[in-house]
Length: 125
Image 1 (cartoon, rainbow, N blue to C red):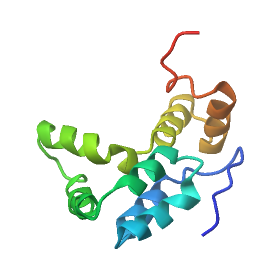
Image 2 (image 1 turned 135 degrees about the horizontal axis):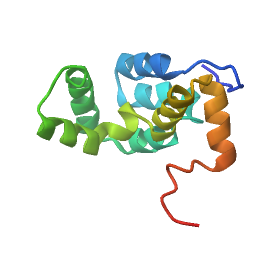
Image 3 (image 1 turned 90 degrees about the vertical axis):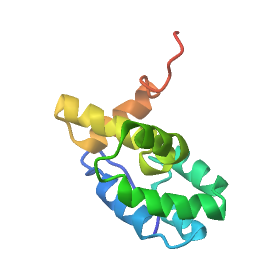
Image 4 (image 1 turned 180 degrees about the vertical axis):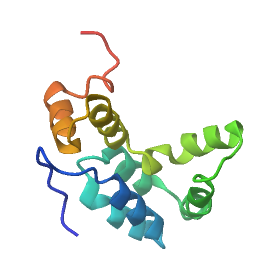
């Protein structure tokens, strides 16, 4: 699959991204599944590349549990270990911006790129 293209009217790729990472059967397949989403999931790609085989096996087991109601302690541990892959920051933030301003997802993503991801840059100017 080629890298996703993002225009002002591009729909949110989160559902397809979620399907792709859940379908991966190996660590290598997971990295390959994330690569087309590099623009929105740089942190996920970096994290997935660092997974050991045991990490990947844990991720596959736990990503299924993550869609269920789990204890807060479990959720915290899942997010610490796998949050970057399950919920890439730019993908999550651009989704929140699009929802907040009732804007097309692509427009929200492009605007965040233009502004330098203000929510992600916590340093004061």
